Image (tube, rainbow over all chains, first blue to last red):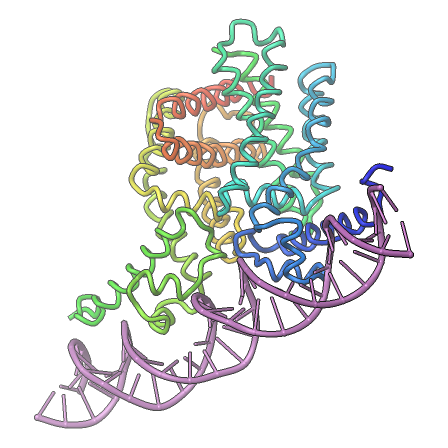
Length: 207
Length: 207
DNA sequence: GTAGTCAGTGAACAACTGTTACCTGAAGGC
DNA sequence: GCCTTCAGGTAACAGTTGTTCACTGACTAC
């Protein structure tokens, strides 16, 4: 029998989840660096020593959260990139994707936005690495597009970095809107407009 | 005699500076939320109680840092906006402005980038308020531009928010480059390209 | 010159932190 | 059935935290 189905392993995973969830919920209004190991353990209903069985550091827990938050995103982004049709449709799909991600896992997204430039080096680097991967992926797709004929490699990365950052600012705007109690129609309209603007610039590059 | 020139007031201001500087230097690699009052006081060579004479909270100190970091920026931005000539030149000027700001006050800028989405609500709101003001200012200038004939008000704010966020990502990229030991030529080239792209989109709006 | 103001000190407080060494008891392999 | 493994618990450690109190003593206003 696989060791992943044992009663013991199941319990272990439950505790790990409890720790991650406890941290995640504290992180809604705090930063990872200000979060104590004991605090998280207490919120998870577990003793501080149990924490060490899973992470030997809060930074390590943070890295686990990064992976968790971005793991599912890779394939979804791939889907959007594979989307056929004109760029406007693809831009709308990207905005919809971001909005959906924020709606389904707000705490994870808030965590990413907050810790991207946050105070814990290990987490910053984990996020940066993932974003580089995203940018490369987007860049590869863009480069394959006939619109990009005559574009240099650094022109492409320039654009894909801009798009990745735009994803982040859109996500952040969604979070801000929802804790102001507004719906996201204004936010998504703005984001779509910005993508359209960028696309127009792309089409007419280099002027 | 003005109370601002008294020996007492001078000493008071020196201590305040020491506290702000101490905090600022700790914040190079930590976040505000994880910074203790005692820690800051110790680094400033002052007792914890003295801290209370100036700020009754770390959040209040953070707000002071925000004001300090962005106060000088307002007029500089105004200068760039007033810059005559074509948009390419103005874009270059904007990038140069950001680079210069990061070079002259790296700690302040890092603080802004980190705490913009950081864990201390008071500071987040202070930064957001200032950025809204910037966006409005930029928006007003853009709207006056003949290129913007036929633009709706929300189209303008869409663009100016994009530009403000772009300033932030450029600043962040400069900081990242300098702690990797690189110079900023690649970063500023990318940033100029992005602004040029955005400008092209603007000129051809709405396509 | 004197009385008052007030920036900074010193000591104490209860509460909390990360980390350790050791113990417990249920699950797993044979 | 027994022995091992190991997730989690208990208890204690030295340090640190924010906050309070009464205090000193150089400056200032009159």
